[in-house]
Image 1 (tube, rainbow, N blue to C red):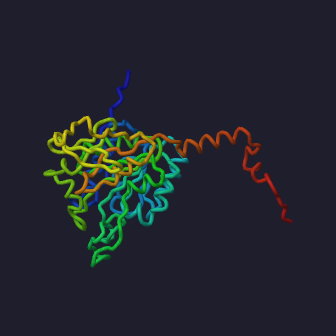
Image 2 (cartoon, rainbow, N blue to C red):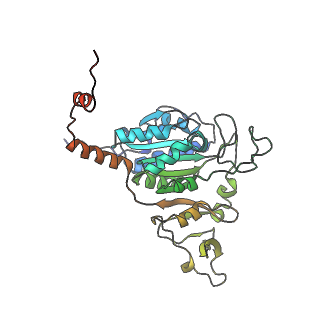
Image 3 (cartoon, rainbow, N blue to C red):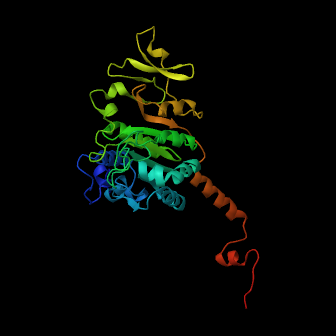
Length: 339
């Protein structure tokens, strides 16, 4: 008798642990979106590994019915890279936050991207250290008042997109915690991309930085203050779908369709696959109120992948080497006999 294969649903990726995030935390929505994405990709739980560092976001591994490893502060990039290199068949996801990734883990972040290891990095950005009770982070806005900046931080924040592209990254996307459909679509594209995929998730911390992204995510004006970019489609946005982006000299400019003779044909067409970084840097750098904030897949470029190159190198060396066993290795080169 033929046994019908059961199709997996997002429920199959939920662990038996209850999430220990604050009620209302954006992490709950991100977790649901990831589970739906990997269910739609039909990834088998034992072929998936979630790696995390330290922070509220890094509890994520406990809530996934897959392999998982809760590692150390800022070092999950190195461990995720090792997991993928040791077992290339695994789909490796790394969960991190703006502090974990961009402060103590900053050096690991850029070198993982530079190497183009085939992992999917989800960077939760709430512009605060939530787990340690509300200190400013590398993405906190200048002037932000916190426990460690009572008079306002005087530092300029990082933009994760700038760092990713500056480190020669080939995939960068951005989404919003409560935009479930967009998040699912973005996570699926990131997982399917070969190489390092970085997805910045604008996430809310209800306790220490509540409504941090509200000026662009509030449903009353989200459509007028964000632009959802889709490859091959015009850069158009707005509740009335009557605003868009053009290039004026070397600068992006927001225009209104119907004014000054502007039509939809005048708008820029999004090309996520172009290797040149100039336009992608302009898009990741857009900030409200001058521009809408870009969400969706901004950059998606094919490039050689680290773990594939590593496997090929090992295979090539094994074919020509005389070292076949550990004994061969121990006797290779300069050898001394100790009496």
